[in-house]
Length: 276
Image (cartoon, rainbow, N blue to C red; front, top):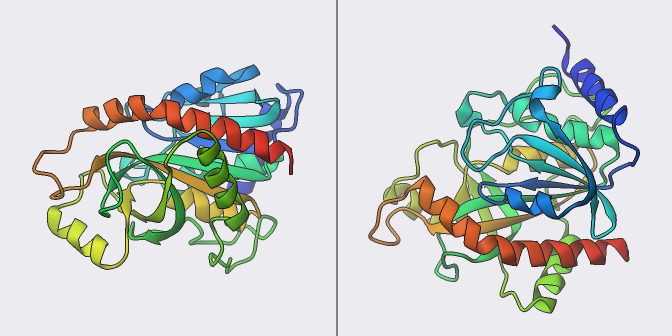
């Protein structure tokens, strides 16, 4: 069996053999947000199933492929479909795409997700820039032998969500007349939605939104020296806030409506990244 470094190198070399550009920006698209990849220019599609030892997405709204080309003229690698611990994958599997992105030359990563709104300032359909997180998943992707050629044993997460990138996204949203919010994201393991009691707890300890992804990818990106920003699409209000049941189909429906604001925000953000 290949060790983690050998697996990463093998996948990186396979992808490099098929592309003619060096991607500088990585984007991970969350549930129901995968259509953004269809706006790329001159892109190559690589299915996860074509990559040796690579996981496969099993959740609705995650199509399971990389698209590598140009967004707004900037060399970009888009991940359409992510992996979650609740699918039965290890955290090494969940974060393997981030390691591959690093090996291909990615310098900046924008992570998106669908999340449940907790705080009063959020409503269904909002976009929220993540300024910090609470890892309540019970795991950390850096547990085990450290990959020394990627990063230090004890990476600092004080500034995990890059301040300049957050300001850039705020500026981009303002230009597009999008009322984007900013807050703290809590990760729970899933796949069951949280109970009303758990949501009350999360609100008490400072969470503004909750989801089942993003945090492991961010931790590994920071460990690898990649600059990170993250945006949540508030696809529903969390359990107990509204007197209604939670359904994944409703999450997908709201994501479908919010994706136009996300597209406009990402397009303008990438244009501003190009100017840096």
